Length: 300
Image (cartoon, rainbow, N blue to C red):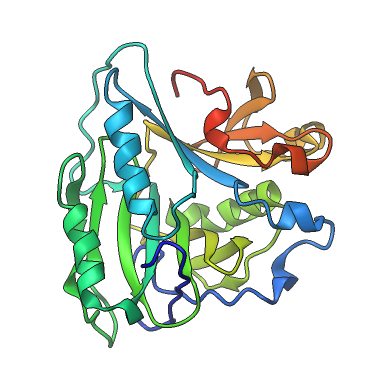
């Protein structure tokens, strides 16, 4: 929990929303395509999330996110909050709807139970709100009941959860929930976007290593939902991926992909989640800046 400390987790039989495998030893980057340069394989902003807030709400949401991420690392600008020009009416989501996007923070348990509970209390204060508590399946129950709680900042934004971990480094993990029948197609789609294969792979869950240093691991994962559940796209949030060779990529995508601004294209995955593609040009090293400094669309 020291902002500059590392952390990790261990795999068990407790299957939850993409958080059951917190292990973070990715010294074996054999899962990364051999075509990737060292810089591409270690881009900390390869994946980021943009949140679009109603007018006047961006600052408190950005501050809330930054405060929580500081528990992992004091300078980790993986989220950008901007504002719409005007408020919009929202459709009420179906009862029991599963948001399609989540952020799971794995925190070292060696610093003690109290520090994890302290962050849990932070997530219970505005603008955070409790979303749901997940039931645990399997032989092992979490030693901290709060580790099954999910929170959110605003309608249409990702779920957030915290997990204690037992070894390795601390982790920021982006998780996309997939329809049961679309999981295999979604896996191929994100392999294409990320230009790498998962380092861990199960029938209903996989992890892509995105970035790793002495302090933290950043991961992207897919979680296959049961047949009777359907993910709901987060209409106020969008994932952005840094890509090269957009001309070669577009014909391979399952849905239309079109430019929305200079250097940015938009498409959808198989479940209707909007995806932004930031096209990198020249040497990647000049593009490794804070993604918050880049222009964003006002609407999703």
